Amino acid sequence: MTLNKISITEYLVDLGEGIASDNIILWQIGPIDISTGIVKSDLSTPIDYQLSAGINAQSLLTSVGQIDAVAQTVDADIDFSNMLLSRLQPYIAPYINMTIEDGMFSTKGRLHADAKDMLTYSGSANISQLHINDNVLKQPLLTWETMDINQLAFDRQQAKIDIDEINFDTLFSRLIISADRTTNISALINTTDTATPPKQVGVEPSNARATSADEAAVLSAGNESPATAKPAQMQLNINKIGFKDSSAFFADNSLTPNFASGIEMLNGQITNLSSNPETTASVDLTGKIDKYAPVTLKGDVNPLLAQPYLDLNLNFDKVELTSVNPYSGTYAGYYIDKGLLSLDLNYQLKNNALVGSNHVVIDQLKLGKPSNSSLATSLPVTLAVALLQDRNGVIDLGVDVSGDIDSPSFSFGSIIINALGNVITKVVTSPFSFLAGLVGDDEEMDKISFDYGLSTITLKQKTTLDKLAKALIDRPLLNLNIKGSVDLINDQQALAESQLHKKLAKTAGIKFKDFPKSLSASQFPATGPIADALYQLAEQELSQPPQDIKQTLKQQTPEITEAELITRWHIGLYNMLKNQQQSTRDDLGELAQQRAKAVKAYLIDQAGIDAGKVFVLESRINTAEDAAEASLELQVK
Image 1: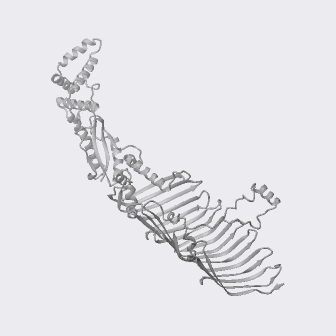
Image 2: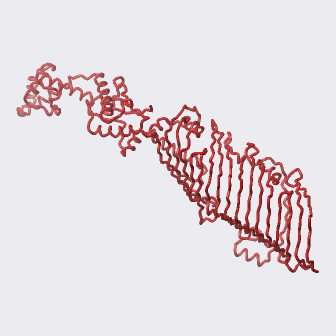
Image 3: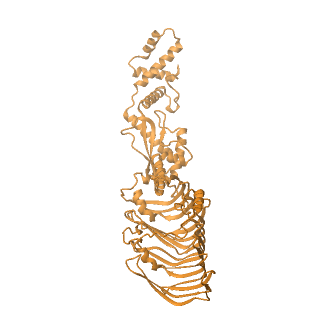
């Protein structure tokens, strides 16, 4: 028997569905129009058909195709338009705390399916006017004007989805960290058991019974039985994901005060995204933070791999630091009154090993009042800023980071914070080493050594002070404190010798500036005015006449010559007189003070340091007696 045509018109179905909800969900399907071509009773020839069906007076499904009952195949052109996504709300409400307020889904394409697990679909798809609300925050969670998929191809047997382009217009998303540090995304899952899942009914598919030969082939090929063979992992390939005039909002309410920021005017694309481990996707996105600070993201990624890959450059330009006050107040211990932040970040992730470099530039940073946060760092932040900020008000830092994301303790944020903390710790614990590095040197500049008994600046000291001055001129927020000290034993001896030289010069009638600087016990003239002055002082200050001392030496060593006797006599007189000279604690304190003043004078008069930046500390009271030097200390203005 043969039917030339089957036709059904204006058919209407009212469907009530109550599996997914306690309430009955009504679906009105119609009008339904179906017509076919020739239909044979033995179904030996494929049947052509045309279908048109309205859904809830809004959506329209049309299909033209062919059904082959013998081959158990379907070939169809499908056009499904204006599906209201809000109609799906009852199905997701028991599980997810969000509401689909608006959105329409449409697709048009070609479908091929059979009873042997073949299912392919190629075509296009679109979701427009999407609006999803977060039921917990009572705010928009995800919205967009349009999402267009211009061409897609799905193949179930090959486990493959190929998409040419996905283009988002005016996409918006929201991420919120709550006071308890949970996110709004985690709060979307409804953990309340509000729905009873449908019972699982075992149905044996028509092709479930394989012949023994089929089973043997499967076992030999995959060493697994048909019952335990795992389905192939779905492959996904997307040529391009485009973004136009999109935005995102982020807030962290776990901080006091709360932090909030947004990225707007997001445009760009991600190309060649694939689950194929041999490929990488290219990212090229631009946007603005808080409407004016440019941000760019460029590089290569593959987030679909079991071990994701990335090589990305992220750049922020001139972001207002006042916007991150909640973070600076919580973790740095100070609020920020002023400043701009620019970041140039490069991160590489391969085999779960992360390596990154951060170029941080902070312009015109000015710290405000302390926050008294219990989470604030113990590091001297103001000193760190003063050390790092140059004369133009710029802080320029390079910070390298690394980590293993397989580690249970891995945290992306923590490795960056730790790396920055390490840089700051190094700077504030060795500030003079840092200053030396600014002028290309590795010499410690926190101590200026002096010759015993002296407070004059030597050539070597001048070289060190010149380098220090150059670094200090480039760090205007730093002041320098100077405190002198002495070496108790050696400086006392040097002061005693200096006092003796002054007395010898006066007794000999010689100006002290003309007195021989190299004069010592072993380098003493045998005759002349200085030798006569030695005899005269010995006569005045020693308890034994100098000639008696000479006679005693001659009796003890009768074999020596007269010249050698005079040399030994002069050495003895010189040392005995030197030991007679007294240097008090006040003399030592004054020497320490003069050393500090000498350093200040050189820095101001010779090296060009502003006098208001250099301070001499009181060195005469409780004078340090461990070294003949001036100790330097940095202080924030």
